[in-house]
Amino acid sequence: MLNRRQFTVSLAASAATATALPAFALSGGQAEKLVASAVSDINKIIASGKSQSRMIADFERVFNRYADVYFIALVTLGPARRTASKAEVDAYVKAFRGYFTRKYGKRFNEFVGGEIKVNGSRKVKKDIQVDTTARLRGQSPFNVTWLVSDRSGSAKISNIIIEGINTLTSERTEIGAMLDRRGGSVARLAADLRKLG
Amino acid sequence: MSVRYSFDLKIKNLVTCLALGSVLALAACGSAPRATGINDPYEAGNRKVHAFNRGLDRAIVRPVANTYGKTTPSPARRAISNVAETLGLPATILNDVLQLRIADAGANTFRFLVNATFGLAGTIDVATEAGIAENPSDFGETLYTWGVGEGAYVELPVLGPSTVRATTGMVVDLITNPLNNVFDGTDRAGATGAGVLAKVDDRYEARELIDEVLYESEDSYSQTRLLYLQNRRFNLTGEQDLDISDLYDDIYGPE
Image (tube, rainbow over all chains, first blue to last red; front, side, top):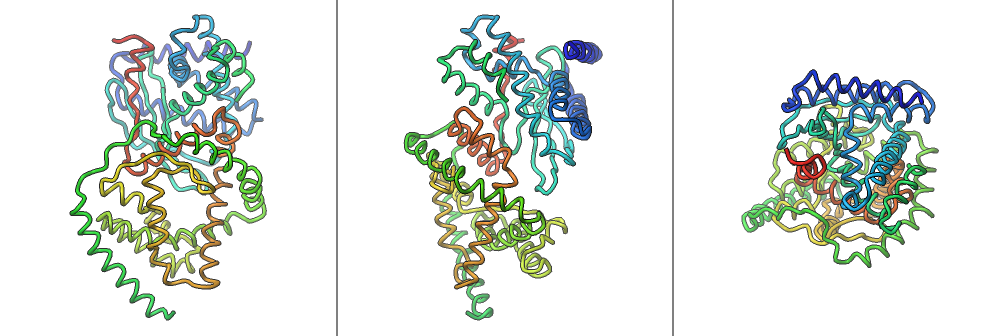
């Protein structure tokens, strides 16, 4: 239950951040700070040298702290979110959280020694787009764009686009294919997601 | 072929292309229609090719790439990839000119001259150290600049994901490559070999992502198509489709 307690602590921390800032006016500076802080927390995990399973557990906490998990999970579920029961959707969101952090957490070794520089930000409708450049060992620098929004009630990252490759649409394609293969059953999808990633 | 002769030939080619480029640029002033979504009328055939490519990767390309990556030290692999990139530069410069990107043509000419000489025949990427980074182009991009639409998505045997426009570009690049007249015999085999090894090295360097897409994803065909199209469109237009405001309204309710 350590996870749940830490989750509560991070929830409280983000709630504190949210009350400190007016919820209706997310500034570019705040969004840039959020991204820089998320990157720094992820770099700390990578540099910790812990075992992969410990790193993934740490990453799940960072993901909860900075990402709009509920929004990401529902967008990737697609239209099925309207027809499934609330219990099914809740089970799916929970399973998605674990699936997502395992899937990306196990690729952390690709980012060892890497750095991300924040170049600036601009407003896109009601949200803020933060532009960064990633430099990884032995690779040409590449563009990473983060979308930050406070529509959930606090400032959270809702999408990451790497050289044009959109994490949300890519995951939506993946989850959509999984759902198709399970006859559209959100319950079966959630059950299988717990084992995947 | 003498060096002097091939140099003259190159200059002649360049002048012809410059003239041709300005004529064509005037002829085709429109910009390409913005490509969005997925246009895949040949999906059934493409999926068959994808199954073949996946089998080829599993049986040959992946094991070869992993062996190459593990047995050849990184600096040696990079040197070979640098040679391949340097040999691709004359074609890139030609396309920069055809797109009237004179600054890019200049930068890439500088890259070519510096890397081919101070970079010991292209093995060391001196130009990037000097602040002139790699900036590739191809005839597919030239067609985009001239206003030609993206066309249908196609997955090519061995070569992988593409579009009708990008495939046309590849064929034209193959025929018009200024180095076609320069190399023959073992030189040509060496140049081709460097090109193949550079691709094998790319497969090794991106192995985590490629393995995940090809072997862990639920529908590797759709995932490959999406990743290719998003990345290619971003490289051409610099634009990314980010707007998810409607989804926010849908999920959190309109404000």
